[in-house]
Length: 247
Image (cartoon, rainbow, N blue to C red; front, top):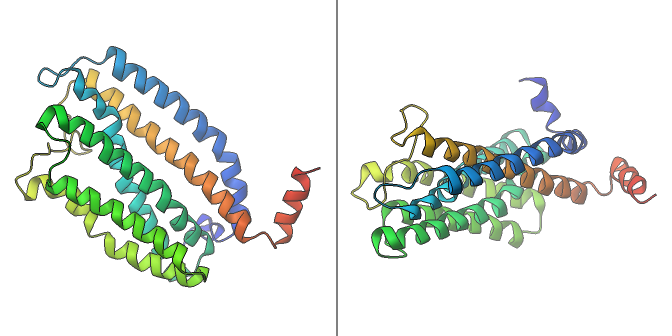
């Protein structure tokens, strides 16, 4: 195993490294999201079929992708906590759930807003929409388990198992439009195929996707740092940190 993997087991090391990375990701998120939004709204051409209503794609697609990525990170962190008993991995898994749930809500809400002018309905029991709704419920389930179980170790183990079981939903979300006859359109762009949209339309979308990931990194590190301080509050380094901040 590489050295950094074992360093992740140290709450203090994680707290220090996230403190150094936070400003970088925060600035990147601000610049990318502002630049991508300006490009998407002011310079990207309107869709020849949907007109300007398609512009919600610049929020809907990044949030849908990020909601799935966040769940996978939560499951992986839970597995690491189960196998290697790493406290920081358990903290990461716990911090992922509320962020992922919020992003999933955003994806579902923007999808409904986009669906009204496109399909004529706010909601249909489409395979893609239904599997995304299940993803949201899985996030809620993880959050409920964390709140219901007082013992942190038991809560981490239980939520890790639930997260790993729920991973089966991720390929269903991704391939639902190929496996079933659905209203939802296929993937807007993939890493293995040339985008169907012109560069003037997919480039700001790519910028928004990266911006969303940077925003997630900021939110994740902020929650993780708070969780570390809360759990390690009896440690000497946390006491020194608090004393230094209040001098």
